[in-house]
Image 1 (tube, rainbow, N blue to C red):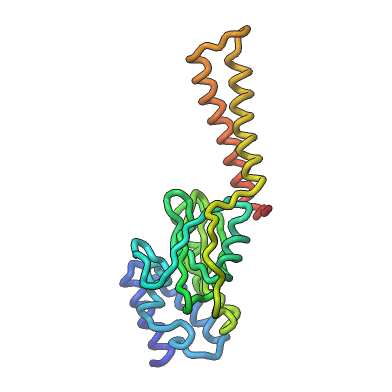
Image 2 (spheres, one colour; image 1 turned 180 degrees about the vertical axis):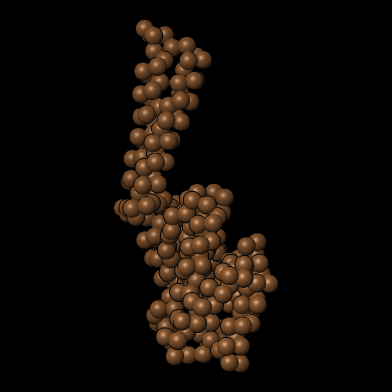
Length: 247
């Protein structure tokens, strides 16, 4: 199959998967330009058309939605905060852990197949809505990135390290599965303490009248303090995500 025929079939597959025609054309154009720099054929670079189209539309191998563990697979669920997520994702990606999704509790659902593990790399993007997630996804797709989960206003992407490291991405003897599942930084605990202090200060300021505290006033002001603290905390978290703060 010629490269021209490959990309024609790919465009048809993308449209059949619900991708708008203009978006499919832009994607194929980007991929054509990328291929020209590699010196390989489209089939060699991207693989079978059906599988590649499925990956581009987040429905192919690696998305893992709703799939149970295969024979011999290791499954590990873990979580962290925004100050360590990228570092830990790439650290464990180098150990062969592929994130397939982020569940409702914010846990990274990761898989690894001993004896056939590959190294993975990850990145995080700030996205505020589905349109932004889709736009960033299409921008990153030509470089091999595919979405692997979203949480609040963050979208995570993965790609096999083979895209940049070649055969060196293979992992002959991966380390044992970590026993720890929760990794929180000092900054996370500092924000939690700040939130609790905000509640305490608001309650103290608004509820005390002499030595007595009315139950209704206490509940109302405690709720108000929680809302104020959560709002300030969320604003700080968004700023730190935008600025890429790490600890």
